[in-house]
Length: 565
Image (tube, rainbow, N blue to C red):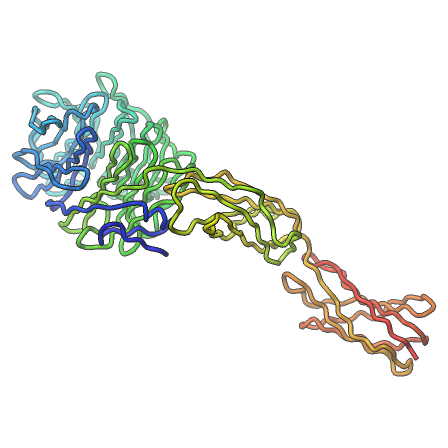
């Protein structure tokens, strides 16, 4: 596996394809926080707002960074802060403080208002803007454990001077999500509930005066397995999909209309990685999937947002304790144009870092060109078959290996074939050993990568024949009738090994043209056999040895002429 360092020692691009990793870059900043609660992107002013969510001290901070990862300022707060949300027009930043909901003008960064809330010391709040209104969660607590099963979290709407309870709530904690792709939709998910809870996900229409609940879904099966362990929610740029970072499952891709699984989902996260964050780019091109993983297992995957446009991901493994080991929950956000991904990582203790990652700027087309050829022209079962073709990639030449996938479909069904590496000139050869006689169709696919869209599949059908066999005979030119004739030989075959216990048919034709069948010749394990005959007549005698073939091997025969004296 080729690894490419990307701008700093903390981030390593791995996996498929390394060429894509070489086109990305990473800038890293150490954050002066001991915990993390929220991240929003102000595209109009190219600023990031982060909150530490620390409940340990009398106050915490709203940090302001630019798109290059440099700290610009911090907003004035006088108490612990947690959730953040940006208004639909980007002009107002909403900040949850322990006893108030604050607003800031994003142009001047000056405080612009406040409304009171219940006093929250420990649990923090989620904040989201939908339908032009601001919502937040309120989690009363019985003790220091905010995830206590007895806690009941309510959904509140910001009003001046006091908030309004929407009437919706749930045991445990709530995660909220809204987005420009569906500005009137609020997504709510149950998180941090008691063990054994079948957590749910639901949506609300926030366009009216009050919230109208839409579809809802729980994920556990009849036996209780598969329950949602919610870490993050994201809505696609067009509002048609909702992605869920589920630590128990991975990244779920859902249809926003009914929360059913989307027709095509994302490939599983690498083995050992637990989903922690998910975010769609505002241009609709990419999805970023964050995870908590150890060692060289990738913690971040960037790939096309639509699974139909390619499943190959640009993978990053955070391995440096001085710059974070994993993506924190809800720690991903994109610039609206998809030019930058902002990722917050943690060392699992008090250390947090901000990464500014620039994925490839565009995706380019790819295509198979020309016709597919085969070597040999007439393939046989059990023998190597090469399928030659050519793949063209628009845009910059990839710096790492590009591979073509293939499947074979025959009477036995569909079978994956080993991938073929594409040469610098675009040529490739898919190698296979067909194991069944008859028609076999090979479909070749390039699934795309972060910089290239998938190519349209191409296919070729070949007629796989039985493997040929051959018989070699060693016979004397002449032999006396009294002592008889001894003929030795060998049966050989291509493809798979010949079956054991083969008996060869042996016939003798004398000079008068009379043909008779002799005792069959048994073939030994090494393919050899021996024939002994006492002919009745002198003169020219022809011996013919034949093999009738089997399911995988063709028939063959050989003749030897002996003069009987």
